[in-house]
Length: 138
Image (cartoon, rainbow, N blue to C red; front, side, top):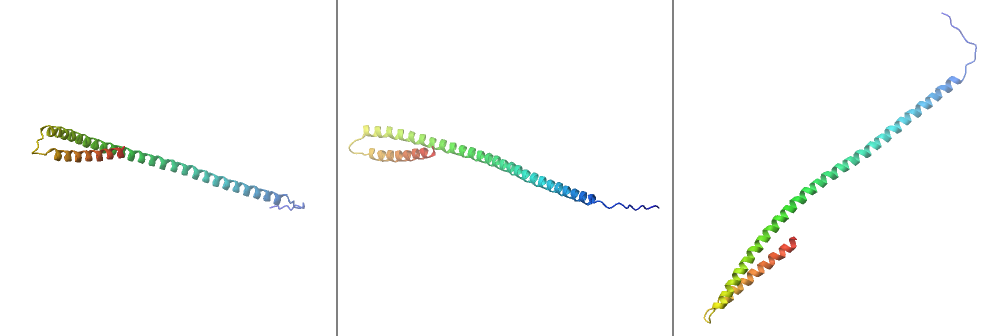
């Protein structure tokens, strides 16, 4: 085994090189960390927007369903009230005919026209109430 000892003085370039490589490796590590943090923030932002969009679509679909249910219910109520108003109109017409007939055939001894007239007023009052309810529904 031959060991050669060099009589040349040690140069200081080797420690400087290791310092430079340490500095550059620290810079690379920091750069990678910053890139990872930036990617994480960007991904979190995109995911939160995706969740918000998804929730808004679900909420919109639910509102559409509820609106359709309310619309169907409203239409059914309106149809029922229209039918009741039509029935009351028919009753009013019948009472009007009876009242006209009674007035034409009334004698001094009987006074049935007042009873029919009061019944007709009751039916008219009910008709007015139903029409008000229909206007409120509209």
